[in-house]
Image (cartoon, rainbow, N blue to C red; front, top):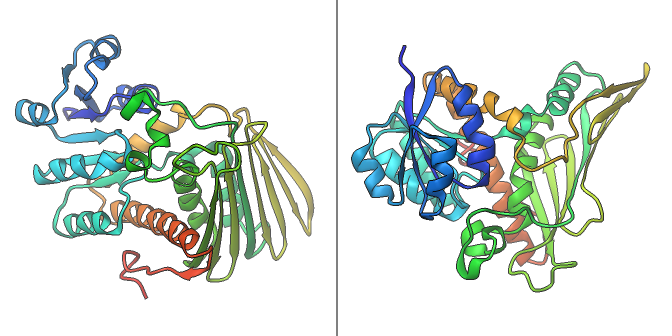
Length: 349
């Protein structure tokens, strides 16, 4: 079978260092073109993809290339523009997180998926971290019983850099009109789809508190605290760009015991004793994790023909958006807890 031909839309850091190596390795996918608004990225594209064509106009890309799919890796607020262009042309879509930033835009994608055999697949690469795969295995095997509480912490010393900048040459992550928010959007989305896979039930209520503890002049928050009530468990999440060290720390407490995930080790304590699982990879190392993306590309291909699998990924993205949006709305409402409308999740309740 010939490879499916695709184009990368947005040739920044995550596209070059995360997506492209995995796409190059894929037995099913081939990148034939790149679009980026910054003409200076043409030299990078020529180096990384010497046989590919470069466009600094999306209209020119779609007019001149016969594509099977696009891989969208632009700043979050622009995702919907390129999603619409791809959906209009009946293309498969791989999209970096966050998929979109509003429920209205999410509804557009839900309507498209309901009427199309094509896929819109969000890159949820963190669930392929070896330490998270092992965590999921331990939870499925009932090592700590029914989950009751989760504490999830992401500590960073500052915002991640960005190749593509917005106005005044400022990192797009720090511009709410481009990013949709600060560290909550940057790290919360990943945490939400991972947590929803672990918690064993639907999230019902969410509250959020957003702060600027250190970077007082930023237009986005540098610290976020989120609390989620699931059907039978609760979670508290803490994200900050103001820490003295990079670290990920997660505690999952159940009726039989507890898992503690500390960057490169899992400590499992239950009624049978204690066991330690160590990993070569430090969870907080780097920001793009290229070793996880081959699994994303594999599942993207699967989603093209497996509708149930495709829709499961959409539900993950929908939950991540609903929790992000709910935490932001809660913050504006004095951090009051609010119920979640799960209309995108199997029709809601």
